[in-house]
Image 1: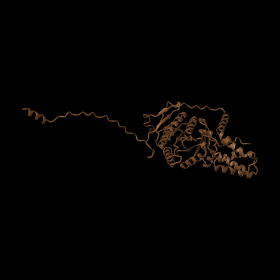
Image 2: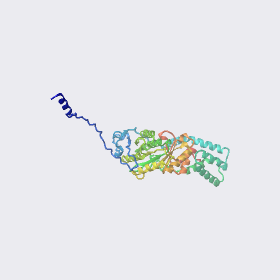
Image 3: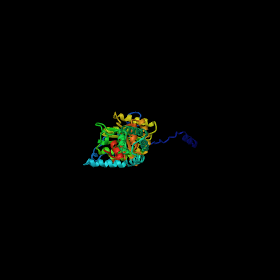
Image 4: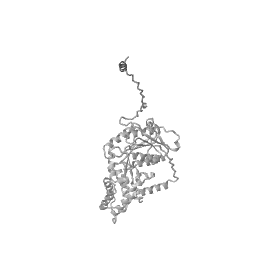
Length: 410
């Protein structure tokens, strides 16, 4: 074999390639997500975060949370926070307590009383009888005290009728007449003082949906109300359905812990109706007495508010047929006439059944309580006269006028 024959053979032999070794990439383990049981297609499938507040005496008991609510929450387990036990000392004598309540109410309404009576005294100074001039001045005083035009006209007409009937009326009697007429105009708000005025139902929770613009004091009112109810021995659940403000959820969590209440929450931007649904499901499963649902207040002048609140109501009724049992509107008393506009917007958007007027301690515009209750025929359930938990007061129309006008002359 010659040199050229050897070279030719090497060219014609097929080339054998070494096999390539391919290491398979590790496959990610796929876990099928469990579909959430949503009440309707409109409710977003967002997994809630549940913060269970357990009283110390029941800390050993395992919280029974609805499976749907507890799924995929912080590594699959609910966060349990144990607040300090709220101890309520029983009063041996109720009479001193009543006097303290009256004194605190008078102090809280001090600026309103000072402003109203300061103007009233100037209006009737040097006059002895209630005549047309006095009534004109009184009308101006009532309007500038944010009682409202419609309510002021009713009060003036009632006094005119009494003057015509009695023929003679001196200015010294004006205080008593005013307190009587104002008390008549305001709606009765509470049948009982038990459970801080809430008629807790047997067998299922009493559901209150809280509405109002941002900054009116919704979150603070919910926290204080929860504290009052837990002190009364009631099991309270709070639903953080204002999912558009992270600060609102965090603030509500702080109040829930202070009050010893259970809070159900989801991530910011979640569907508020989904939060409300999960809260009620969990509350029913765990035997809660009262459920407080916080809502967003950014839409007080938009059509979207009606749709959002209606959606929340419809979703809650799927868990408890007649829920919510109450829709409470929270208004900032220091805004005066602006509170009237807010009340108008919300009563048009949803069926408001009660009112809470906050921040009355820092304003002379407390007359707004009288005007709003009369104009919208909605009872004022609570008033806020300070930052403390105990400064959320059950509203009593007789005690309110007493704080403004003093005791009636006998």
